[in-house]
Image (cartoon, rainbow, N blue to C red; front, side, top):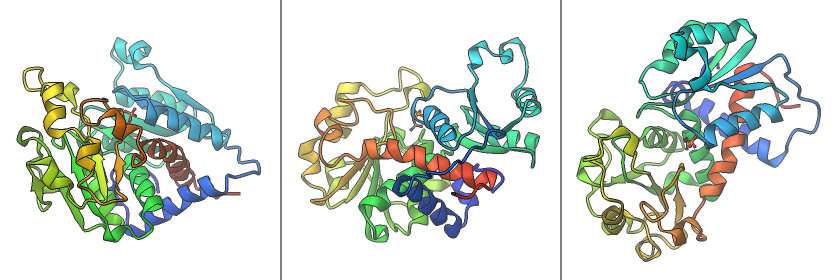
Length: 304
Ligand code: CP
């Protein structure tokens, strides 16, 4: 695997073997030396991140690699250097993996063209389109809780129009064999693109939740809409917030997922975030294992 740009580029076998590899990182952490000191990771995050950026750093450290995270506000991009020339600069300094996040569609693929076979690009969030490592960690979390995921009734709720997580989650759940995936959210935040066309949609959360055994909640991406369009937090919570009372209509052993960052009291109540059905912190923990597996695969480094 030279680059990871889109889960749609993976076969089901590739996808499942990455999940198996990530699970092995959790079950049998490598004990022997796994130093990849000549394989440097560079984080190029042109949008804010906590989970993804830090998990890339931790994953690199666990593999014995060095990593650098560019502070783009203080990098030479502010002097006019292009993203492409920034990547060429880091490539010349020995970087072999780039974790890229951008608000602009196409940037990870453009940078993959720049590096060609000399380095790998890991798409760590591309506009509203792709977040493949998030899709992998979501699938891993689902599979840990539901060893037979194909039978799951999944629901994704919230700001689907602006969500790269939702697009990658739909791809990931399908690669796991999940057939029943439904969407719910306010009409103005529902997507109109092909990625979601054949999925059933609900305009009422209580109806949508009924009988579901996997519910993924999404944040309203206020940074991708003008203030006058952004829903009021309190009224959004009243209509679309997941509460314990609403969860009572779901399957008894429902799991609640959220990619983070989440807004307590908006899309989720405190009780749901902190309650027994939440697997949110499992998702975060799985992010490190998934990114270790992806980096090993891209560098061709087997587990010792
Ligand atoms: N889920 C996710 O991508 O979180 P961060 O924006 O904190 O990386």
